Amino acid sequence: MKRALPGLAVNGLLCLGAAFSLLPLFWMLSVSFMRPGEADSFPPPLLPHAPSLAAYRTLFAEQGMGRYFVNSLFLASAATVLSLGFNVMAGYAFAKLRFAGRERLFQLLLLALVIPGQVAMIPLFLMLKDIGLVNNFGGILVPAAASVFGIFLVRQYAQSIPDEILEAARVDGAGEFRIFASIVAPILQPIMVTLATFTFMGAWNDFMWPLIVLSDERLYTLPVALASLSREHVQDAELMMAGAVVTVLPVLALFIVLQRYYIRGLLAGSVKG
Amino acid sequence: MKGQGAGWLFVAPALAVIGLFFFAPAVAALGLSLTDFDIYALADWRNLRFVGLRNYTELLANPLFWQALRNTLYFVAVGVPLSIGASLAAALLLDSRLARFKGFFRTALFAPVVTTLVAVAVIWRYLLHTRYGLINYALGAVGISPIDWLGDPRWAMPAIILFAVWKNFGYNMLIFVAGLQTIPEELYEAARMDGASALRRFWHVTLPGLAPVVLLVSLLTIAGYLQLFAEPYVMTQGGPGQSTVSVLYFMYEQGFKWWNLGVASAVAFLLFLMMLAVTFVQLAVARRRGVL
Image (tube, rainbow over all chains, first blue to last red; front, top):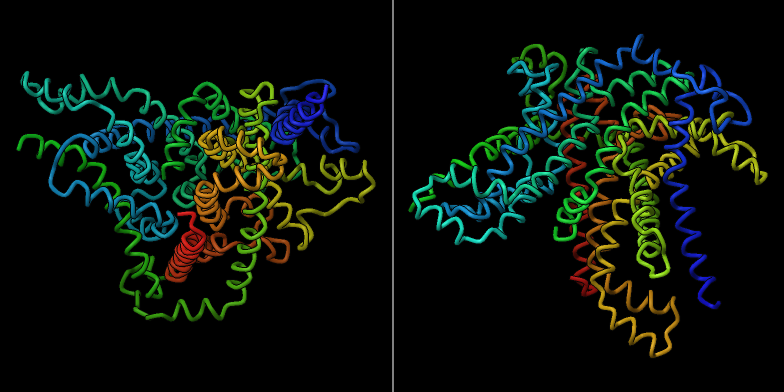
């Protein structure tokens, strides 16, 4: 019986913590199904009186949410494909292919981790403007194509590939690209899922750079559109919550499905730093 | 040697992207910060003039810049310990042998981290609403009169800090959970045999064992919190009374609202220097205490 009390305390506190984390999200979902104006009353209602899709209808029919959703989906998917291509090749090469200056180059890359991205933002903006990529999806995708974090992640994982397999393939006369495509890529699959999850979520959630680069409303991503919407429609709680649901739900679902891979990347990126 | 060319071929695309779109602009930022780049230069590069350190001296004489700096440091000084404390507490609970449904709790506590910052900032704006917000309603239940969270200069930053803790504590929590698992069980056993209480075990076994992780986590969190931007952009637009203008918010307004890109580059560079300074101080402290 003496053990029951600490156990109760631990689990009780965990329940409180989970409530703290999840309540705002439940509240978002609940309010998004309320009728216009329903949330603005006292005491604040926790559940919709009669669930309604009015807010979603307004959002998609009048506020063009469908377009923003497609923009976000396209940008996040394209960024993921690009980042997989560029980072996996480079990460593998830094781990397994010998070439002059490899170690020095890699150290130079790690230097980039101390420089905050915002330092590069302004000259990058001017550069992209000169080549016509401002107010254009290219301006989002080009800088997202490769990242030091991605290369680092893949390199760590690729170091566990036994050299013998690669040597054997070389002896059999396979070219480096052939080896990469038929032997290395299948082995790297788990870390590719991790990298893809990270890149997709990062691109989906990104705010400051799309806010700077995309000025044409038709090109807005969900976060940029939501921020601008929230500045115009401060009063419409239901509308804003429906917008938040549309923005948050896809990444939340993706995380729940791919949790294992996501956490692997998170720990690789920090604990071993 | 075979593979030499292939190696270069494999890294070249990624290196080109990072070099061209990250390193080159980062270096260019220093140059740009020494010019008077403004909307006229944006129209025609010939209007660009070299002004030496003038942007920096003018920034240091600008009260709004100092305000932004103070606000950001306030956010960091209060928000980072609170966030790390919440992360550590949650990690200890999750790591406890008494905890049930660990998988569920871990996912639940981590969920805010993967959400879209802008979207959840919008949610919190309504939760913090003076009249219809759940937070004031809950406070009212225990007899606290409504607080004008986002409209009162004294409360706006604490509200943003509360939000940031909610959004971010799950990230470091996972890192702490991984760190806790590396502390050998024998150390706890030995302490228990010596009759050490749970609190003493935490102080003498858990904390020293976690020290390197705490150092790393605080470096990353301080660096992240110094980059405060979207929260004030969505929740307060820097107000009320400029009480939530952060350094990056100031940079954004200078650069992309007023097109003073030279000044904005100087702000970015000062932010970078601050982050470097914090890192060096922390590493030096850690070395003296023998953590590293």
